[in-house]
Image (cartoon, rainbow, N blue to C red):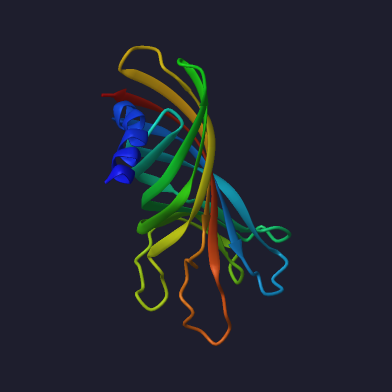
Length: 218
């Protein structure tokens, strides 16, 4: 019993500090599409910018540790074209719903603090589309297009999972309000394409996001 009272006494300072906070975030992301071109050296896959938006909640255990979760809409876009023969140019837009869960470590003063986030995320591939042009090599006619892409359950892996890490700054500008800016990196561990062919063709997303957010601290 004495041990139990000792543990509770040690926990009281943390429980006294503990608080909830909720907020919103938004920003831009830059996606890198990882694919094996299988000796098609003329084919190029370029990184592309996208948008990320979300809502977030955090439970601060003490003044340096918090448990943070978000629900984000994040784009993971890329461009596919040919380098030598300019016969095609596809620009892909992929929308994901993501649920990051992370530990948030903070340090610094009362108003201005630095923080580091580390954790995992789960995601779901919501929609996909593309626009651009393609050339008919027999007629030299150029076809422009803008279209939605239908998912194929045998080919497309719509579930996603990976790791994330971020660094940022927070400014507490009022008693209950704080603003943050963060540079975050998402590393996907799940191929966007299922292993359904004789030749393996895994495809991964690696995404860097720069986002700002506002918190209401209870």
